[in-house]
Length: 163
Image 1 (cartoon, rainbow, N blue to C red):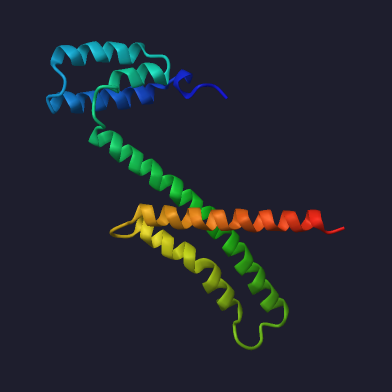
Image 2 (image 1 turned 180 degrees about the vertical axis):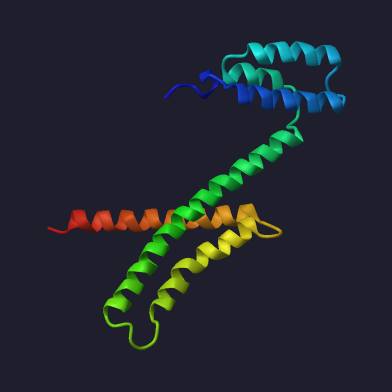
């Protein structure tokens, strides 16, 4: 795998850095002359290392922090959708079994639906709702992921031990 600093950059990445540099200039961290010099270097940049050199002595801008937050939320949203997909599949199978059995009596698949989708719905609300708490959602997703890995590890050990 290549060094991340040696990866080539896109025009969009250059433009984001130009916006960051403009923010730093408005805040008084860069003079107009420094801003112009860095703009030339940004537009001449070919790799991430070249771009990173232009922001090395500057604090993280509010624009960069906002973009990082948006990307983090997007990644967590994809993980939640992935988790919910398995729950929805299991729920649909249970509803199918209930319908195939004649759909008589109580709607028992509701318990499967509640127990499998409730964590994803709770985390989705915490991520997307008012007062979102990204750290809690990320910690819960990571804990579930680690439990699943441990469960898979135990299963594979059992398979190796069985004749």
